[in-house]
Image 1 (cartoon, one colour):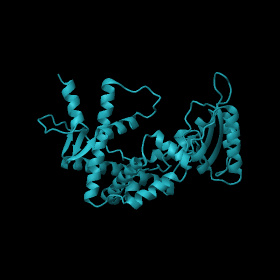
Image 2: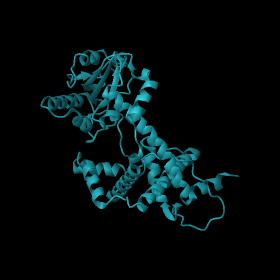
Image 3: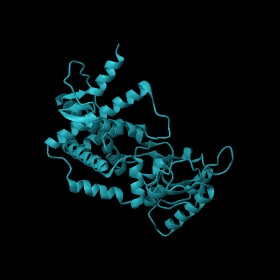
Image 4: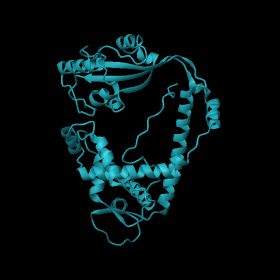
Length: 356
């Protein structure tokens, strides 16, 4: 069972509101500015907002852009997101929960802290945002987070009895069939086409650079620098760098796929790191694709985990809390939508153009 690990939480710009599809009002409407794609209680959502949200949803700009029905479907999803955000933001404003300038400034300072001014400016250019755009996103994110905390999170209670009942009904889930290794990794690749995926945008472009970079990082680790901080700033594995290199729990069977890493990791005590290890060789060239350093966070032997284990209790509480939170969010956001007056001109236009 890998559920012993406490799920990480985060607060993105929009908190993933899953609402029912937008109602299409296809009757007679008063005229509206061509740059306005929707209104929520009379507040306009502009074409420029839709374009930015749509472009952000596309992700990798090097991938072919969708066309036709697929593009329109994605834009409808982006439109739905903007409308849902506006509904919730208006509710927060009525409750005097809008984030202050001081809170926005503090969050912006926190976001800039890991970067040099040059790297931060480049990341801002890459996202096609201005600093004012970013401040608006931060304000909206903080505002929605405050509303969620007040209206939902603060009302969720998980009792000891809830935890006990869940454990008794799902006891088999807490029986580890094999040893589990909780690992973190700093990875450097020699593949120039891969994305850096770290805070500093640091990327080796060939094997010589990769070797020098991993050796420099190992030297810093040996002097006592924090593994997670170095991983966030320099590791070239995007899916783990943002969490300090945390790979979660890896089963003993999966570990055997890389014999060199397995041999090195199984000799470690919790908190120790390996020497520099080659990544699995390319099956074509038989050459390593880069280098890695692993840290053993903990080792979980096979066997039944009892309810008395604090990690089991914590994992169950978090799972129950998240489940109840999602249920309350769905109900709350549906309630807000029912109370809102929405005009989705973009959806109407698609319907009028394509319904024959």
